[in-house]
Image 1 (cartoon, protein in one colour):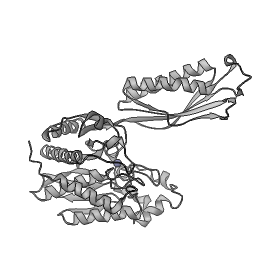
Image 2 (tube, protein in one colour):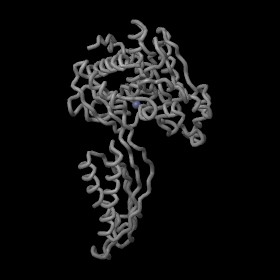
Image 3 (cartoon, protein in one colour):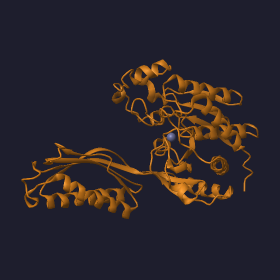
Length: 409
Ligand SMILES: [Zn+2]
């Protein structure tokens, strides 16, 4: 067992200071490319100025702080300091300030075997301009800058907002290469869901992010009079949707997946008219690509059956999707060992939400740690985690970093 000499209570004190500076009763206000985000960044740079680290900011706005090691290569630890409007005090900030504490702890001792690099990714949330994982994607060189040129929040374009902060959208992918030499990327984050709390777990190792299939399902029948059309002579698309949805929900539950119908509408939407058409959204998620594909196919079959029974036509339009992102199995194993080091029962989960780690994982061996979210709430001023769990999360991250550093080539 390693000594793990960090002092997690310093990370929690930092989190409280940052919340005081850029939060309040309405929640965190650190929206990327705004004055409050720059305030948070300046505060972080002040903390870093007390340490023997080199700080620089890349073309995509990502902040890097490096504690030099004795051999080439580096281990990156971080997350994002930006928040959604009225956001929580822990989303992203936890991983950045836990990383700051690890830098501080290692700066107090002998130089690490390889460099230790804190990263604060720019605009993880995409809250203003709709592009999540902005900085981490740019660091992999995969940001579609052209597609973002028109992105606007109604008052300014992304290009203008970035320029105000001293960055050029067109040059964002110049951050590409910042991960060259990275031996591992570690990210501590809040779960943002209820699973850990319900199970009574303090820390979990995350083995990847779920893949997503997002579709709009449209059913078309024929409008008819609510009184004059007998039940046997209707072609009711809403009835088909209403029969299909619970069946898809059951399929997802059986597969250990999630299926969400977030929106449903009937046309024309009049109380006395059998609808002519019905439309609903379907969001399917699972960590395994084959299971996700099978679930989609089964959902399509269920909808087709319901459509046939109601004598209506079904069509599907794919809105968006992303393949599952598996994290590095060796790092997941080290994560389990790090939990044991800290006296925490190891639990492995898959993330339902996307994180910067998902952008980084295809290039660099990656793993995440989760701590519980009270009542599963996040992206809200009510977001919270018990202090005991915050401390344990930082402690496990410290042990994990020790194990990664010891196994570095
Ligand atoms: Zn986050």
